[in-house]
Amino acid sequence: MRKFVIFGASGDLTSRYLLPALARLLECGRLPADLSIEGIARSDWSQEEFREHVREKFAQNATDVAPESRDALLSRLSYASGDITDPDSLRPLLPTDEPIVAYLALPPAVFAPTIKALAAAGLADGSRIVVEKPFGEDLESARELNRLIRQSFRESVVFRLDHFLGKQTVQNVLGLRFANRIFEPIWNRNHVERVDIVWDETIALEGRAGYYDATGAARDMLQNHLLQLTALLAMEPPATMDERDLRDRKAELMRAVHTMTEQEVSAGTVRGRYTAGEISGRQVPSYTDEQGVDPTRNTETFAQVTLTIDNWRWADVPFTLRSGKALGRDRREMVVHLRKVPHMAFDQTSRPRQPGNAIVLGMDPDTVAATVNINGPGDPFSLECIRLQTVLAPQSIPAYGRLLLDVIEGDPVLSIRDDEAEEAWRIVEPVLAAWERDLVPLEDYRAGSSGPVELREPEMGVPARPEPPEDESGC
Ligand code: NDP
Image 1 (cartoon, rainbow, N blue to C red):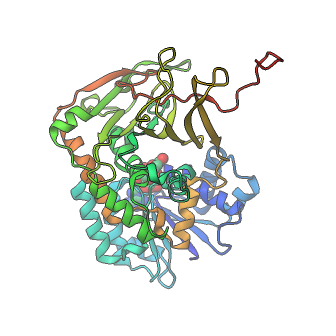
Image 2 (image 1 turned 60 degrees about the vertical axis):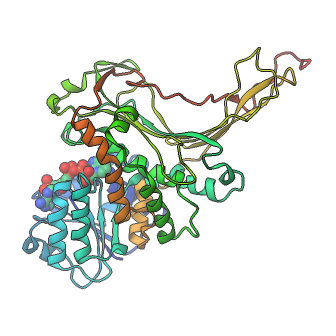
Image 3 (image 1 turned 90 degrees about the horizontal axis):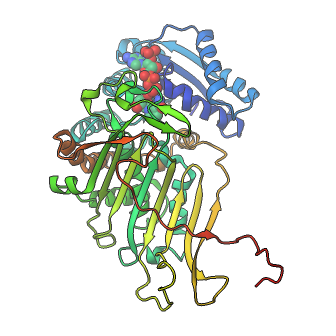
């Protein structure tokens, strides 16, 4: 692959994530030496104006990339302006004799016309299409988009990206589960009490009303990122890590997620919207007072949904997916809560009862932790809950970089297959429909608070290696 074409090159995604990730790949020696990058958008810019725009954005978004590597990437960039939804305007911008990566960094409304235009303009054999989230805005539109793509492209050349799948902790779910003997035997309803997948953020709207107010927390986070995490955490073991085996397993799991009834949505979901408050000394206005927000849309900034999975392994185990903005604390983790032991022989009267074990996969920063009850350092018959934790080294290549590399190398293993994209909407649609009908109240929560509902966190215990006792005698 020698040409990487970004449709929507003047937009936020391109300058915030795509070009910095490509620059980082170049710096790490992972970008093919002959790969050139072409940007296309409607903005009437010269080559130099585009490069200047990218240079300015690099100063904000690519600070982890050395200036020489940024310059090296700039020297590979070119720009063309045109309306890409029009095949006649698009045709002269595309090479016909060599395959390209066509990256659609475009507003969702432009996906379908661009796919039609690309098909009409004709891409050389071996070309790849990359589609950003959100893939459709409901089940019907996702199906329609898939139908359209299928008319002109094979599924193996289509990459529906979800950048969470490029995160190292997320990939580590696979290593942890399927490369160790100790976890898989307990990874089921007999041993797991519940699973929480949490993405709580302190950041508020940050000027993104144009996108967020029409989207909300459930569509922005649960429908894609958190459901993908659910699939990886709960799927059956694949035979290999090839794209077919892995994605078959994810899709199979998603098909088993129970379709919620209205009563279940009322009982098992919470939606909220932040009001004015303070987060770490920063004053945050009420969501409805943020610039560009239409209060009558009732957009949720917090969503929590408890799902169940109708299969042998997970029957009756609640999986709670939760994400919110403007909360008091960043908490980004997947927690597998294990059941308590069936009988506790230790005297529990003088101390709080010991919790069940928990396995915690933290994201940003990336950590792996487990809580274990052991005999305390003092009385050998009293128990202490300790935390075994490791902090993973930061990713050398950002999540987007990892996924772009897969695109360039033609491996869709970490992109979302057509059936997964549709299943995700099938799962979330009943929730959105019930919320639309106000069957679940939109609850206010103060910015800086813990949200409209608390999620019981695991007892994380004391670190495994506490400071040695002050007393020299060691008693
Ligand atoms: P922007 O609105 O910032 O950019 C959209 C881009 O599309 C602009 O470059 C615009 O160029 C171009 N465009 C729109 N219509 C046409 C057209 N007819 N012909 C040619 N170019 C066109 O959006 P974002 O960059 O924020 O988002 C792009 C996609 O990425 C969306 O699907 C979004 O959901 C997704 N995404 C964004 C993230 C982010 O942080 N920004 C994160 C994850 C996903 P011009 O105005 O010059 O025509």
